[in-house]
Amino acid sequence: EAGVAQSPRYKIIEKRQSVAFWCNPISGHATLYWYQQILGQGPKLLIQFQNNGVVDDSQLPKDRFSAERLKGVDSTLKIQPAKLEDSAVYLCASSRVAGGSYEQYFGPGTRLTVT
Amino acid sequence: AQKVTQAQTEISVVEKEDVTLDCVYETRDTTYYLFWYKQPPSGELVFLIRRNSFDEQNEISGRYSWNFQKSTSSFNFTITASQVVDSAVYFCALGMDSSYKLIFGSGTRLLVRP
Image (tube, rainbow over all chains, first blue to last red; front, side):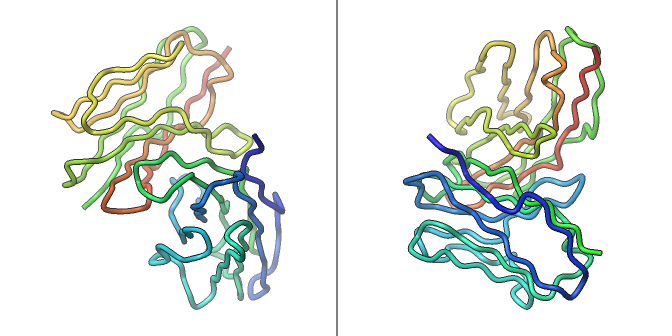
């Protein structure tokens, strides 16, 4: 069974530019998560989808971040415009169903550097 | 408030030593779930174990073992006879039925030296 796929693996941009990350979850997993992991910290949830609907986006900085999950499979996370403090690893995860009781499976992440 | 504390920022051991990674959690929920994840240098978080709050039995899987104690709100992870390949950052996380998200600790970086 293929794992969670993410691209690109690395991205370097200048502040005020825009960037987009792509995620393909494990086949059959209805729930998809985007996390931000700043160096030296644990992952922090940005947004969670159940199929193609948003379950929780309370910690997503909506003035600059947006995410969509069309057709309930792949997802894209966008930052526009980027700030220096957005430098982090962006992790995508998926689980069979929503809920804090289910293990989540993570992709390799995208390391973003904003200069 | 829900919180996970991993007080050990970094641990360094010599190969074959045993090592215990501490995890203390806070939640008011009576039903909750605890997880351990491993993050090797490649960056991908690898799921290791899940325990629910009603099951306090300790678990052993090869060189790995977990000690869950509700009385002290702890869910500690022990690696027996550590190996260089165990070098990684290890995260403890808390999940609850009342919330969809996992709450992660800040992680413990384990370095196993040959």
